[in-house]
Length: 176
Image 1 (cartoon, rainbow, N blue to C red):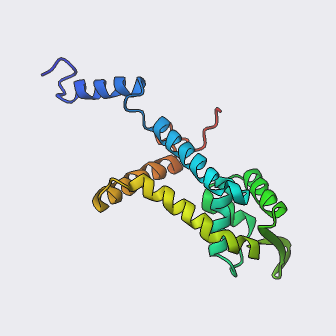
Image 2 (cartoon, rainbow, N blue to C red):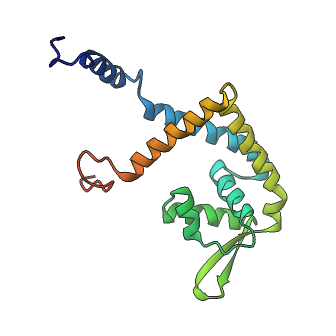
């Protein structure tokens, strides 16, 4: 017995909670900093073609789907972006000549979005920028460590997408 309710693990758990509160073990801020650093690096890489990291991600995805029927909603679903965010990104890409809209032949009320020739010309540049960033992220990791990291990150994303679970809100925090 340890005086912590009989659990030998209680002191370690309490220490871990304390370290998370002081940000020594806080995962969220680290993930946010990594995401921001990746965005900065990619935006710098794509500066001369007039693209931000977010625009490059969307444009690269659209370029890989050239010839497929892609609607703006598909972009939002794939990247987990809200409708206003997708609309803003696509409007800026259209203004720069990287995408074009066309009517959906099956439903004239719907719009399809497609990468233009200009987008295809800079696609390799976008791809190279994103591959360089991925290489930096995993440079000192073994294949096993990379697999473990992806598994852990997928687990975090899955838990966040499913909601917090503790309050039963199912991810829909009603008291925001």
